[in-house]
Image 1 (cartoon, rainbow, N blue to C red):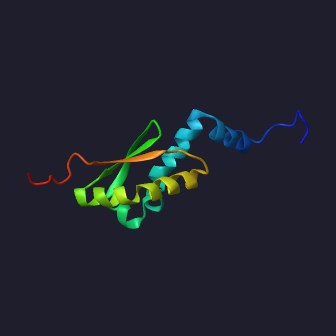
Image 2 (tube, one colour):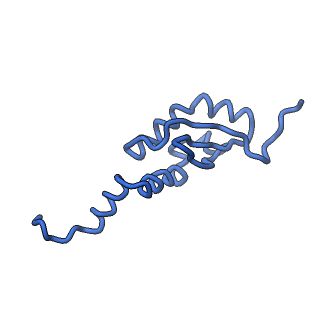
Image 3 (cartoon, helix red, strand yellow):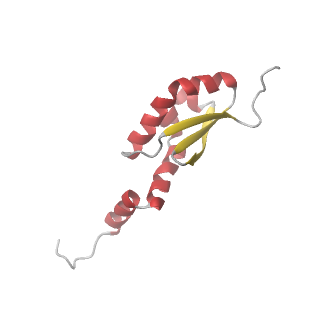
Amino acid sequence: MRKNDPTPVGDILAKLVKTTGLGKKLQQARIWDQWEQVAGKNLAKHGRPHAIRDGTLIVEVDSTVWMNRYAYQKWSILRRANRMAKRELVSDVFIMLTPDSEQDPA
């Protein structure tokens, strides 16, 4: 390709995804789209991504039982999310109960 040849739009967009904050946000959004593959089929039924803040993926789960199961798998979830993006999108996973989840008896 010569210096003055037009650059294909796909190439420009691919570069923006790799080099800009917006590109990182778009890759993070894929976690929502690919949640079953990131979390695994069983976990995905009982939790969902809530947000990503300062590199931490916040996951809402529907019970304390599933909170423990997510905690056990958090490093696998983190690895799969980053592998999907081919770079580090998240550096930690924080698990919380959904506001309308079951409450533990006191």
